[in-house]
Length: 301
Image 1 (cartoon, one colour):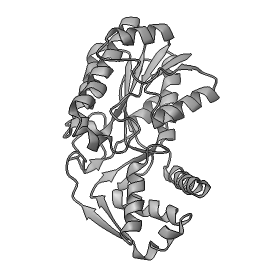
Image 2 (cartoon, one colour; image 1 turned 45 degrees about the vertical axis):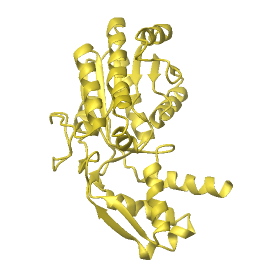
Image 3 (tube, helix red, strand yellow; image 1 turned 120 degrees about the vertical axis):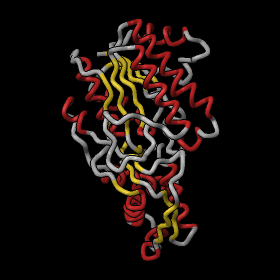
Image 4 (tube, helix red, strand yellow; image 1 turned 30 degrees about the vertical axis):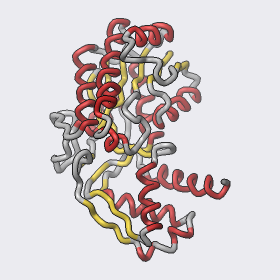
């Protein structure tokens, strides 16, 4: 099997490349900008030259950033170009060359009004720039190529995808124990866990299984953002004395959840388990390792 990964520079992409190389699966990762919507033939050149058995598209506006949804409100055209037009261009070439396409999408195609976790049967109703462009990208795939799998993921975190988490801790220290969070529920998902899921799907696609369509994946245990921040602070206190001193003074302030954020960003992962046998994994260990790596890096600098 040979895989072409578009957008491999993201946190998920870096983890996926590691897994592919560990398994000695041949993979190609084009440089950023190699596929350019202003040069429609660029996609054909890149994909034809690579001659992959399948394409995995991880490209997205500010891929690898926890602030992408917020930044998209100020950069709507750029978000539209990457999440919609770029995705549609890749889908066209894959269809022409009869190459299966696996595409990473987002929970932000939903508006967050539902009380329970979103399933694949729920109609998308995005309420932000990022969500509208992402949904348009999904629709471009669905209308263009039959051999596609779209994976909508939950709230991602990991190395190089941790700005919001660092901001919480900075605010905690600067505010003497006070930190403001959104009044929302989400499904934290480590980038390495999502990479594992994408690889598992990719391996089954390589077996010519007819499982095309849309799937959801989020790690085990959804929770309120305030609860996640409490866990983050607890782990940070084990390695950072400045955080440890504030444990008894922790005061989480609940702010209103307004667009582009959504009140419910949880996803049901039943379909992907029933189809591919992919089980959800907990996120706590990944969070603990990430926080420990921050402190180790700071001590070594």
